[in-house]
Length: 439
Picture 1 (cartoon, rainbow, N blue to C red):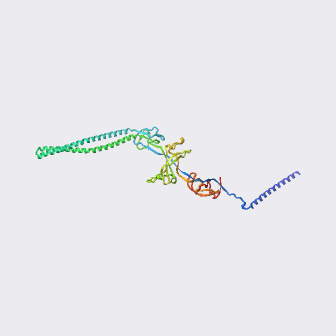
Picture 2: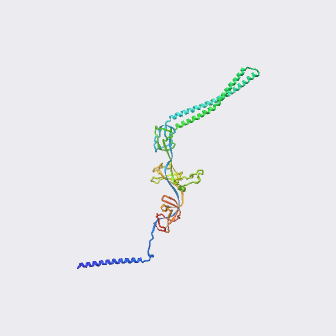
Picture 3: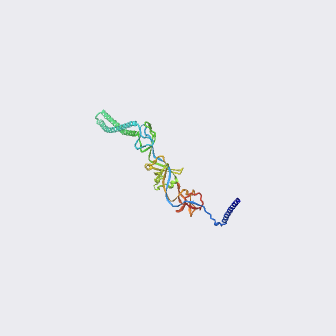
């Protein structure tokens, strides 16, 4: 009788639990119905918002830096070729590519014996002609004196002839043979004077011819001296040996390049700039423009920063904007040259590599100054040149004037006022007048 009683109690408990669950569900349902009957004005609707970062606009004067790239070149590269032919009898002991040779050092020597002989021969010819001219001048003076004597004898003979002839014809003194003899004497002296006159007249011509020959001989002597000096080839500056094709004992000919020297005392980088950037930002002094030539005169030689693109440090070398090299009408680019002196190309702070030929570098050229511009992250300006402002915590789109884009920065010259809250968060097609929440 005990087991049926237990079963009866379990059934009662189960029924109580079911009833409680039904009552709870009914209560929840009634509550929901009551809420649905409320007026729409009593319902709370939450507006979505955008979390943004804003920047308080402040105008500043910003100097422009024009950037470009180029390869370092040695300004002066000289190819050395012998000016005389011959056998190389000596060369610089360290004539290897990369070695540095000092000014005045002997690069190579050519066998000078043939040129020494030519010099001696030319010198002897000059001496001979100089002596010949001295002899001609001396003989010229002697013959001028002889001509004077002959002219005097001629005059005496003429007077003697006239006296004998007069005595014979008028006074019947003397003989006809005496007259003939006096005439013969006059004719003989006259012939001698005539010949001497011709001889004397030829002396200036002979002297001038000899002097011309002497000038020619002296020129050959100068050439012989020069050729002998050219047998020794020296470095005309402190330079780096860039290429060598020369060996001791080699026969060389004039004009054939055998050594190339690079003057690393002045380096140069040629950089191509967008012509619009150059026109807008490069600094020119119009007061120094050359009115007689249509070129880029008056370019200010401002200091520049040169950085090797492969360097892992932030060190830079000092250069100077030197000149405008060319304008390319096809690419609309302006090529400028930056010069770096040897003392500025040395290793910075005693560390790292010096600036040398072949390095590809970036160059920063100081330009004009942008007055009263606003610097923003580039992504804060849309492709339509608009920015987003926060006005009373609402998003507002405004058009702006972009003065310059540089890297990740945009410089705004108009459309923004001081104190405006410019949204610097990157937004993609936001709704106008959206609610904003500052981060």
